[in-house]
Image (cartoon, rainbow, N blue to C red):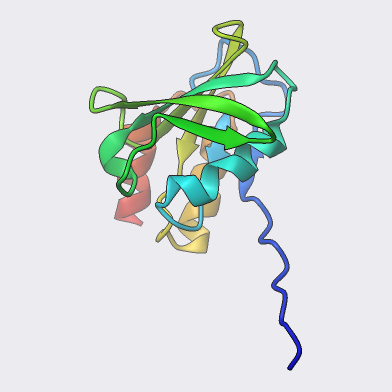
Amino acid sequence: MTAVTEAPAQLRLRLDPDATRKTVLDGAWWPRTSDLAAELPALIEELGTARGEITHALLHGPDWDEPHPRRMTAGGRAVRMGWFTAQPTGLLTMITDFGRDRYDLFVVPADATEAAADQAMAAAADPADLRRSPELLEQLRKG
């Protein structure tokens, strides 16, 4: 019997190529599931240390499956997780080097259609688009 190995799925991430702290969002991420433990490590690996080592991730708890871990390991590093109901739905904030910089990413729901996700990701990565994650989610759900 031959073992079948599946190729890893490509990360669905779109970033503003000229990101500055003056933009509302730095881009968007479209995970395949709402299981953060399965999804987040690849995102942290992809973002690497471009803005410094990612030390914290802040999330809207109801957006993700339980359990909500307090720490996660990615790339051999521990990342502290913050679960907040006050964090806007659809927003993932990743803090680097204990506050030196951050990423604010719109999280496209895993069950979004490809067309809707593509449109929302383009908007989130557009520095001229000043909509926040709840507004992008509303547009995405309207189709």
